[in-house]
Length: 307
Image 1 (cartoon, one colour):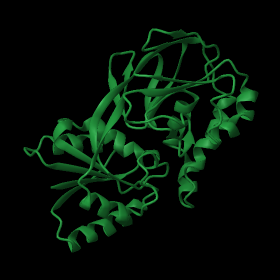
Image 2: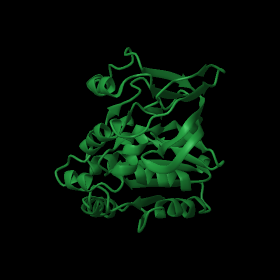
Image 3: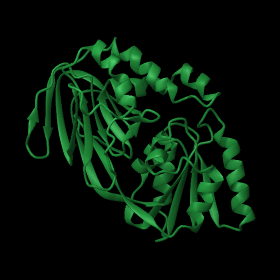
Image 4: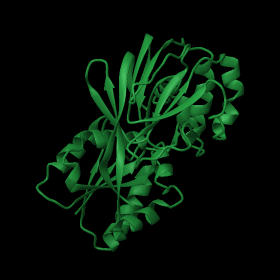
């Protein structure tokens, strides 16, 4: 049985018509399915929890929405071993779709691919362990610092809503990054990797834990990140003047920043970060709060994704 969780408000409401087209296609093919429309923030997670509690060993849970909807769903899921997860991206960033190499397909093409596919990818998930002990899974990335502040602001950005009307919503992240780069406070701290190596960066701009290479609508923070290797790629930017960081932004967008002083990338199954002052934290673009300490962990082969 196929169970669809649909966020019809994604891409400034354009996803609603996409869902109507998908539903018509399912009916024309006599596919057995049920669907659930999200109503409020957090609703997708509750729906996922309900679906995963169904007494069946053949649950195919398909998300029609953006990266934020996926994040809610994976955090509501349980019984991961009996659920096959599918994704039809209809958001503005679609970084998970980029990582899974499905953005090139139309929504109907992706639906048909899901319906005929017998293959699954055993995909890693990341986990943020917050300083209060709470945990949050992520499929794409999590971070602390500028990238998280940008994600927080993008959630309510009028600019993003405006640009979405022209299919340019991902440009919001670049514009907000420039704004925050020159305005937000920085912090010294320590970064401890899984092999016990401890880094002591100064003036941390951000540390991003990447499960896939891209976040923020296609920014390749960790070009070599793989969601099947049991590790996260940690991109930490520090010890660099803000002006120089801005000047090197083009190298970051071109995925050529790994050789630049101040841009460090480490592969690690876990990383502990302790800061001298609070900074903003996100998971898949969802705001988690202001923190001084946290841990990023990789949960290897945590979810079966229909590919």
